[in-house]
Image (cartoon, rainbow, N blue to C red):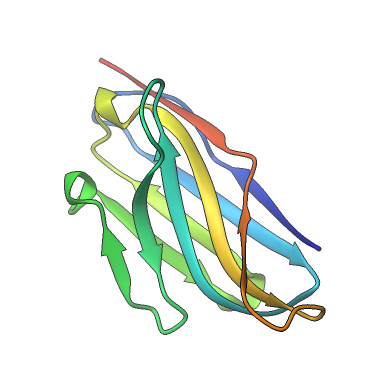
Length: 121
């Protein structure tokens, strides 16, 4: 019912920047919250940054001041600008959105397929 397509991952040297994008499409009535998670090999998935429908943002402590989450409501798109990247930022990054669809009576969570971010030292 809802599809998420991520883009922007890749290989970058430490100190470099990447911008991730996630476009939501399908039977969307409204989007409440949008977020980016990441999962490194052997580790649990963790919340990197989130943004509410009202635009309130929150960040993982280790990325504060380096990452910025933003969204374009008209395009149903969420972005993650990542600056001053470190090798420990290497992970698969997943987009997550909480959506009310045309066919649901309550909000549901949807996930993207993930995009690899690799930061070399």
